[in-house]
Amino acid sequence: MAKLPSGRNVAITPDLLFEHLETSNFMTWMSLQLEPMSPEQMAGYFDVIEFRTPLVDPPKTAEEAGPRTYSGFGVAEVMTEKCTWSQEDKTAFMQWLSGKPTQDWILEQYGEFEKILAQGPGQVHHSVLNQLGAKDPADLGRKILDS
Image: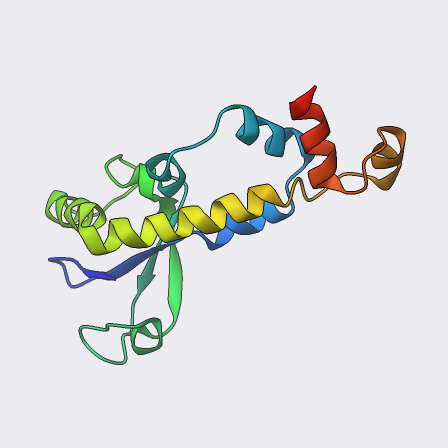
C-alpha cells in the first residue's frame, strides 16, 4: 500500500483480472497460451484501489486500511489522462510500484496467474470436450497446443 503526497492511500489488486481468467472463454485462454504475458504486462491489468477512510494512518494492512473503492483505472492507465491525480501523486505511485516489495508481490501474483492458466479455460461446453476427446478444459488445451 502506498501513501501518496496528496494523502491518498492506494494499492493494486489482481482480483478482477483473476476472476475474469477463472471464467474466461476458450479463446481468451488460448491467446494467453500463445502469447504469454510477463509479470510486468500482467500487472498493467491490475486495478488501482483507494482506501478513503483508513482506520490507522498510515495503514500497513488491508484491515487497517478500511473499505476499498476501485479508482476506475488500472495500473497501465496511471500515467494517462484517465487518472486525474496530480503529477506528483502519479510519480510517487510509479516509484512505489517499481519498489522491491511491490515487485516481489507482483511476482507472487504472477505465480497465481500461472496456476489459473494451468487449470484451462473456464467456459468450455461439455459437448465440445466430448467431441474432441478431452476430459476437462485443461486437457483440451493441452491437446490443441500439442497438435
